[in-house]
Image (tube, rainbow, N blue to C red; front, side, top):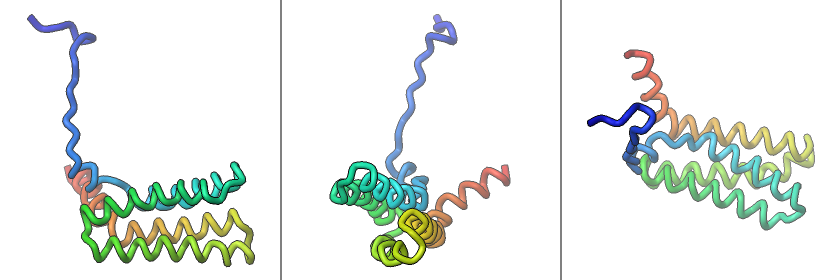
Length: 130
């Protein structure tokens, strides 16, 4: 005897490989830089802002190593660290928040260029072709 539609239970199987392939690291990296700075400003605690950035950064590194390999992971990690460092100098020229937005956009572009477009772009083209 079948249950009425409102009583059916849907079971989803989570595939960690699929999650790693589809994780938008360009978004994670950019949000991590913005959220880290926002946390530091909002709480007055630079170390807490650094923890936020580190959590997002380590998540990105995990996904890059899993789907792209060590070389891409190292390349994008260096980009992220360079962006973090550059934001401090750029902040003196254009202001703190504009600087964070600029380096976040550049970091997101690099993540898309070297990682995400290989995985997310493929899925998008398959959806359009169907």
